[in-house]
Image 1 (cartoon, helix red, strand yellow):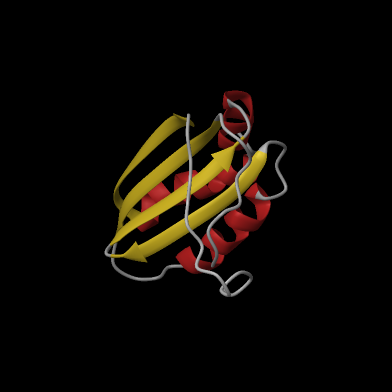
Image 2 (cartoon, one colour):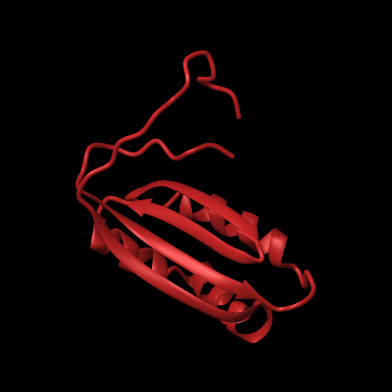
Length: 113
């Protein structure tokens, strides 16, 4: 996984923080499918995700309208329902406007994943 290459600000971030239930129950396959599907949506800019106990996924979007459209995508709605029924003990979604971003990249590591 790599750090998402985002455009000049402003843009939007959706932060999805979760605590999982026990067992895989098809979670990994669905998470992979949702990441691929999100990448095809208008306004999608990138995604970053980490899980070790607490899971955090941040997706980046051009607009609030593109976020709303993703939330209502029929396949994503199925995944949301399955999450409530099977995969999550608890989750929180935060939608934020990114006003500034900056970073650091060590010379010679560009392109390594």
